[in-house]
Figure 1 (cartoon, one colour):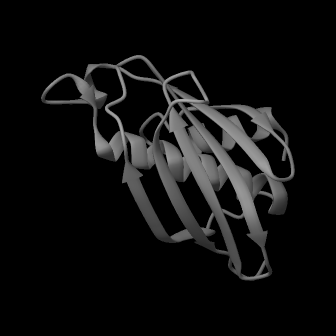
Figure 2 (cartoon, helix red, strand yellow):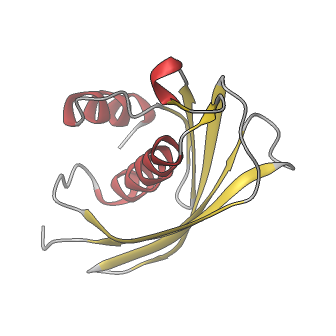
Length: 132
């Protein structure tokens, strides 16, 4: 799938804003979410669910970019380690595909606030791919 096709697919598949795919290759995807007040938790930082949602959407986009619009490819595992509080504003998800098989895709995602050298969280994600 192309970046435009993925952005249209994601916009139609989710009721909430999943973010925007900015870059896509066979092994990498970059997504951005422009946060609003509803993405904040007490204390003025981006919430964990916001961060997890963007990481999951980035891996979903990367998997679909490789296999096509298979809507029922689903997350089977997501593990996140938070290291810093991200400031409100733009949050970036830099997804990397580690393995793409017939039934499983495994990857990781680094989240940052615009500086790839200063990530705020690391996420490992596994997707189940249905027969298609």
